[in-house]
Length: 111
Image 1 (cartoon, one colour):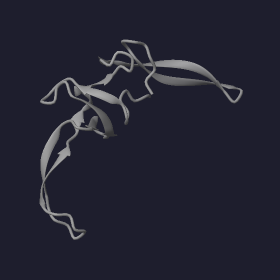
Image 2 (cartoon, rainbow, N blue to C red):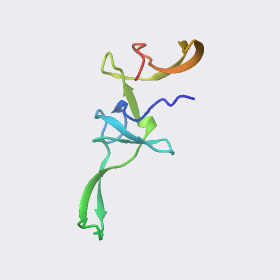
Image 3 (tube, helix red, strand yellow):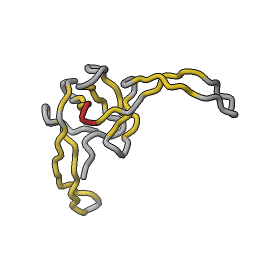
């Protein structure tokens, strides 16, 4: 099965305190959560380490559930749903079946 949201996708937050913000997916976690660049910033208390890191309060990106974000359409720049299209491609003289993610609004392929 093809994942609807992948690392490197440009997404927009549609629910929560950061509604309307855009960012790039840094990491996809197992429990249907994502870490998005510049979204869901929380303050975290950090203990000093022997490697020289100072103690204090740092701002980090917390995970956000994938249902609260939508992929941005590459053509229109607006949020869109993601579909999967099955294509037949000829590679090295063989025909292979390939699943490709597609933006529902414009029909364009997502990288």
